[in-house]
Amino acid sequence: MLDQKRVFESLKVHNVTYYVGVPDSYLNGFCNYALANCGDRNVITANEGNAVALAAGHYLATKEIPLVYMQNSGEGNAVNPLASLADKDVYAVPMILLIGWRGQGDSEPNHPQHWRQGEITTSLLDILHIPYSILTDDDDAFDKEVDKAVRYCEGERGVYAFVVPKGVMADPDKPNNVDDVYPMSREEAIEVIMDHMPEDTIYSATTGRATRELFFLREKRNETKAHDFLNVGSMGHASSVALGIALSNPDRKVVALDGDSAAIMHMGAMTMASKVKAPNFLHVVLNNGSHESVGGQPSAGHLIDWTEIASACGYETVGKAVTSEAELIDAVEKLSNCGRAAFIDCRIHKGLNRKLPPIIFDHREAIDALIDDLNG
Image 1 (cartoon, rainbow, N blue to C red):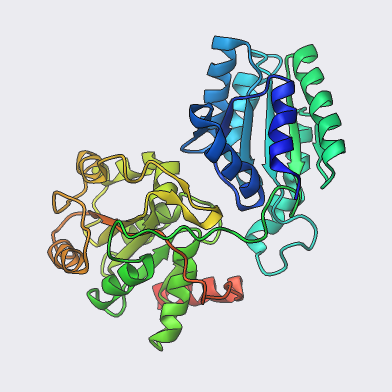
Image 2 (cartoon, one colour; image 1 turned 180 degrees about the vertical axis):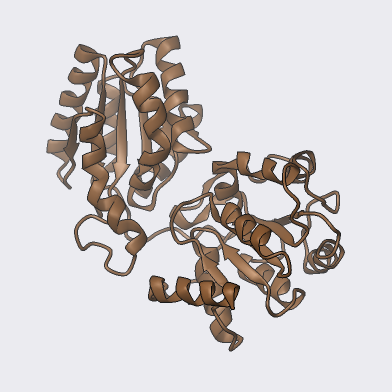
């Protein structure tokens, strides 16, 4: 891994000292150094498009070149403001992009959700006319790449990208930041919900640990996986998939096992509860206030009132966050037959179950089993 202290010193020499973005496990060395050392000059955003726009505002106000960090899956969220705001033919806003290159070549053979994104990572930059460098684990070379990128940004008023392969900015020992703010773990909360919903309930689990924990809970409980949608990619969309299923299968209960960072990423989806009738839909945000799967960086999950937001969007709620097993059971029982789409902010503590191996499964086989179950 690159020496992160030297990385930030090199950026500082070129007056690149403002960092915004969405954390990525391939960039966890960079993200955690920024979190520990950059104070309010490092802003973790709701999504990558939000980061590009925030960076644009910073440049307009200061004329300083900002750096936007993201996983390559976030390029899709960033395309709109990159093409229609920052582009040289629109407002010509210079910035540096730092993009974790998941799915490069055969680097992730068991994660097909990253394959296509890995294949098109640099092609998207080409389409957007954004020049880029593929970084290597070479500190001296990084200094030269920063100099080249800043010269381009200043000279062309354009965007330049650094594409970061596996291992270049990631500590192989991902931190496990455990706290005891709330008594339940995510895995415990999921099992409580499963224990108090009908056996044929459909579950849509969000990107990250929730999918892995649901997968292995099914094995532990000797239950079918045919009722489950594992949203292994497309962060922020698990609740929308769940709502689509609920609207088309009104006789089945459908639960979205969401994460706070994922729900924040596309929070606008929550407003659908005010537009459609889905009394069989329960949306649960498993809220630990962090981007846990990529390194534990803080989210806004514990800073906002999810229950008030959900209520304003048209959901039925119990009027407050739940923070214990007893409160979660009570909320599930009150809301599962309330006659409206329902929402629970379930506060949990941080911490990863290190005993769970990565999920290795046949994605097409799993989704076909769910399709057969829904259409049987």
